[in-house]
Amino acid sequence: MVQHSDSVDISDIEGARDRFDDESVVKRTPVERSTSLDELTGGEVFLKMEHLQWTGSFKTRGAYNKIAQCVAEDDTDRVVAASAGNHAQGVALAATKLGIDSTIVMPRTAPQAKVDATRSYGADVELVGTDFREAMDFAEELVSGTDAEFVHAYDDPAIVAGQGTLGLEMYEDLPEVDTVVVPIGGGGLIAGIATAFAERSPETRVVGVQATDAATVPDSLQKGAPISLESVNTIADGIATGGVSELTLSLIEEYVDDVVTVTDGEIARAILLLLERAKQVVEGAGAASVAAIISDELDVEGETVMALLCGGNLDMTMLQTVLVHALSDREQLLRLRVRIDDQSGKMEEISGVIADHNANIQTVRHDRSAPELDVGEAHLDFQIETSGAGQARAIIRSIRDHGYEVTHVNA
Image (cartoon, rainbow, N blue to C red; front, side, top):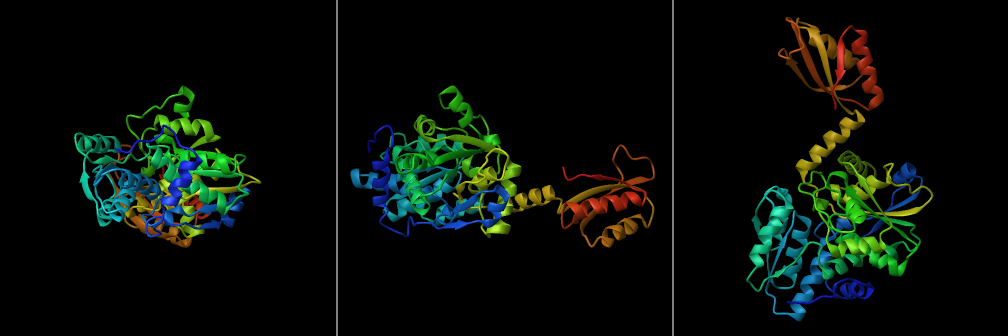
């Protein structure tokens, strides 16, 4: 098997970029200024559009670098990987382009769109377990005792070096950048990018972002060793690895200036903001960088900042979930519970109050079984489309002015 050094330096990253000789595998992705994010942050915000990579994420960079070295230096004819989706597609495309077979183990919970895409790039896909860790265990069993090469999602110098080519691009795209913001799952992406910036622009601040319910790096840095989570729960499945490696943690510790966390609610807000203002469809992991710069966790006022949109493989079911959450948070999707005497005409009266505000009722439901109701009472549960918080509050006031007890139940 191919042997590697224990760490990564700029020469490894430059060597990886030299291997990217096929633009149908890895292409240079664009950068765009976002004036909307300028206004929200007080900085000059640029978006690195890596979600427009061929497979919809940065993962092909590391996978291609790793597999190309295996093919050049060894008699490898098959690779195996474990992934929730983006690494899977990167490995599948890279292996197919380099003329070898690939088997990808994905958790049964992986979005169907990512499973289908992985197969379309030429891989055999096996669905095993309920999370990344179970898929990883099975993939390692497949490799054991065979000549197949295991392609780890992040714990490999060749993978880190491949991802680091993105850091070279980001610097060349915007040499004057003050801060770059990079999502963190297993740490391979930020480890490579930070290594590149340490050489090209050491004065640039490198900030990592993790989802709050999948965050392992802050504790790992504090304890000086990688820690793992038994379970993770985040809409950002692309960074839900539940752990980092000694390799990636050592590079983060050396080259990354700060690590912040963002909630799923903040990530959902960022996804919707990117849809509306930047016209970009970005998955949870890809939107984490924007979630960070619009949160209270990271101040970029007065800075030139580049947020990395690292993935765009947003499952449509997840998009629906995100939209409902984000619109509810804005009160553009309003849920009200109105207590009434269960008599004819009450629904019509309250519906008329709502219509007077030019809001649209999506659904309404009678509930006569709630334990707090007296005999002869009912709840009317309305789901209403509004223009935002101002209209929502006006509707609630009007219903109360008509003598009804009303509860806002978005939460």
